[in-house]
Image (cartoon, rainbow, N blue to C red; front, side):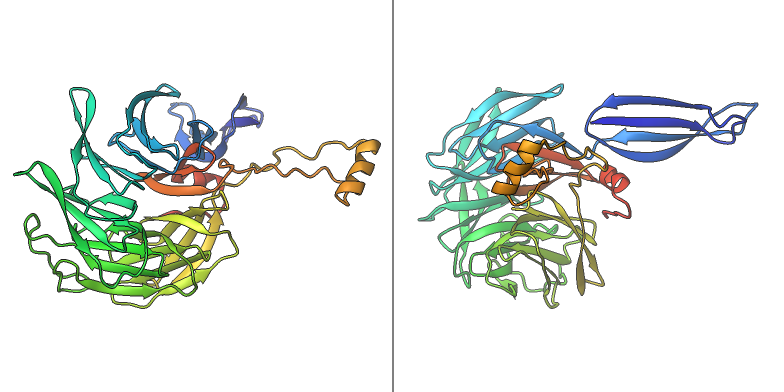
Length: 418
């Protein structure tokens, strides 16, 4: 697709004073004003420029079941739906494969890369989790004592990176912290009242509270306070008593659907949940659940931007923006974020022979295409925050896409992500 940008000189004696340039790239447009410093003129320069909505990186034909970035986003760790974790380093516009972490014996189910300590934690269907440290250019694993008898399904570092939580099919959450005497990571378990597999986790910004989404159609907020390593926490909107394993709040989803994704807002006062029933729900600490049932296919994950915007992704292959209002008392669909370019080409001419063939096979004479126009060609599995105004998604099509919020706002009329 050919994109064009124009340079206009406003208040010019001649309305033909403009420059037109073009280049070939699938991008979308934004606008800005720049002052032309000229003693003889008060003209302004209007620039209609081209900014990308999303960059697509392909890592093969295998589904990407999970991914995580290092602190400066120059490296990515991902699992191609196997027992290996592959680490790539960006080199220009390409990604070079530099390491393979192959300690797991069954499928890797989740990865999290700590930005401050540069440690990677992985978990898998082999009931194990490993913490990986980069030593002399090689990644070396450290032992984690999970004490579970079924698959580990999800893992997340705490904000201060002094502990991490592992969800499992054993109907328990293992909160792990480092024991220097034995040089391993030990765990404490949160069990009650969980009745099924934990499929999503997220930490509160205070490093103490932990939210869990489960296959029992419920979401929970627990205290994961460990007195051996954490200072005594202060009160929050979720409650004051924060002994380890204390249930702060429980939410029952309005329909029977696994809670695939869960996320705290930036302040930690609000919680968002997405389920297999195509439902997005939000709640403020101590408040009631507010839900919206959508017409889309099920969601798999969600993230917050600010206190009013939630981006969810799933089987529709298209990130979706929702807006939250009034202390989580109202949530509404705002927009699909991956929109095809306007005027991006019309239908092809149909010959008489093809017209009769299509009337016979499809009952129509139009040359309709079944190809997806979205950047993801299969379901979005995971949504991650990439930067202050960016997020990334990975999917079953082997693609990782980095989305820029400012470019999305410029290309979609009336869109605001904050």
